[in-house]
Every structure is written in structure tokens, then in C-alpha cells.
Length: 214
Image (cartoon, rainbow, N blue to C red; front, side, top):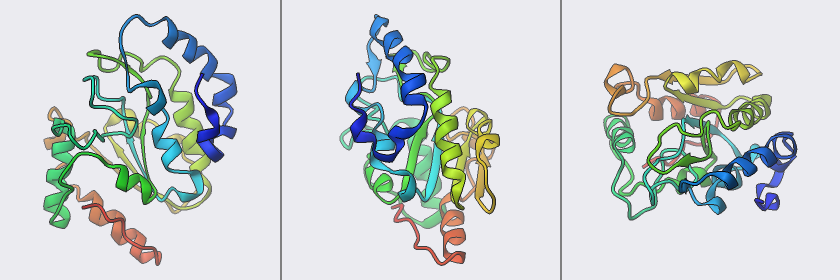
């Protein structure tokens, strides 16, 4: 059972009492290796509390390669070679703002209020999308509903992420909806979308500080 005390204000979401026990039973019965390791499963929420969240980047599911996923969408541990999706994100960032991080650990973004959330928080090793129907999407919906209380920037990359836009209440948000940065789709609208400068320009117009992306 996950230590929910580390979730802070997120622990009050109904998901953790109504849905998580069944998911944890399913995970306990899983014979394959599950990624990321259990203590890192809710890292995105633990690292970025609701009132501190300024930007949401919505991914799909964790990297299915052992040693890559560590609980933050698109992020990998600092010593891990860049996965192709993250390489494309950094390529777009170089084109957009002239710089990118030197390693793939995006914890620094999370600490600035960028919620790096996947729509599924677990994946069997080697089986991308293997837990997409396990029940995690109810958590995604509740998180997004909670974050509709004031204007925020939402980066919805790929159709699965864009399907959650209808669960975001409120007005005056910035929505950037493009193709996913994976090699299969990045050239169909992710490259050239300039999401990082657009977020910062929107925040500047509201009198808010930019994100230190690079």
C-alpha cells in the first residue's frame, strides 16, 4: 500500500479511497515487472502540489524500459540516455528558446510547478500501454478537475492527452494541443509548435515569472 501521506493535498481526491485499492490488487497479481518502482509511482503529484502547479504536461504512460521511468512524465534519471520522445522535446526546445537541459531528469521543472503527469501511472516492462485500462484515468480526470480552479497552462501532446481537455473546468487557461513528441508523430505538428515560449509569453502577460526550462 502506498504511503498516501506523501501526496499532500492530492490525497483528498476520491480516487485514493475508491479506485486505488483495486488497482493495487491488480498490480500485486501482475507477474511481469512493473515500472516505475512502486515508491516512485506518484512522484509527479508528490513533487507538485495543486496550489503550486503552474503548467501541466500530460503524457500517456511511463517508459516501458527498465531503469527509465521514475514517476515524472517524459523524464528519465540523469544518467539514462535520452529516449526518443524526450530527444524530440529537447530538439523543439532548442529551436524554440535556444537551449535545453543537458540530461533527461526533469525534476527541476516539477520543482517550478510543472506537473509532469501520465494518464497511466504504471506499465509492465516491455509492454507500452499495458496498463492503460487499469483505472488510472479516473485519477487523471480528478487531478485535472482540481486544477481548473484558476488559469493554468495545459500542454496536451497527442490524442490520448487531448481527450482529457473536456475534464478541465474553468476559463482563461492556455491550451497547447499538438501531436505527441514520439518519433512516430513529432513531425506532424509537434515540431514548430513552440510550446515553451508560448507558455512563458502567456505567463508574462499575466505578470507571472517564466519557467526555467533549459
